[in-house]
Length: 211
Image 1: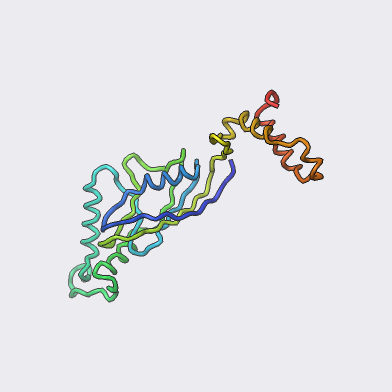
Image 2: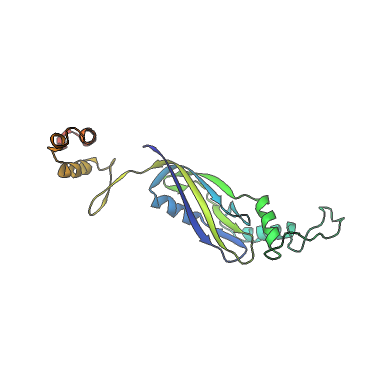
């Protein structure tokens, strides 16, 4: 297999503060690109939401995380850690009281995650899921940039099916033979020499008995 690089972007709509499990969304993207094994980097292109990995079993974990974040980054302002100073209001509140707190919560978490891919799926623990963590009250349209590096399955498209060239080299050999013009080399004075060499290689993959 050859190492490939793929870049893309996807959009996810959020509706309120909290977590959206995007594990299946990313796994579906991986399978749609016929990716097998490699590294995927996900970058959330916003400053008021996060990406995080956490428990996927007990929803109380996510509820407690939300409440804890609200407690350490309140929306009405902040005091010193030991509560000895007066409440200080946020100077950046152009989009409402949740504006600056959302930026702080993003800075305390992360907006980029790299994960391994094995067998066309994210490598995660049994109790782990990948979440988009929305920090704004009303939510928004969130974009995630994707960068994949690794192995991609090779296919040949026929009129009725997709054939895996490694598992079905005989079928691929038949397709090439049926579409090959044996007089092509003479007609184009050698332009198709590389195609001839490719056909020879396909014969090698399929075996001499199929030629």
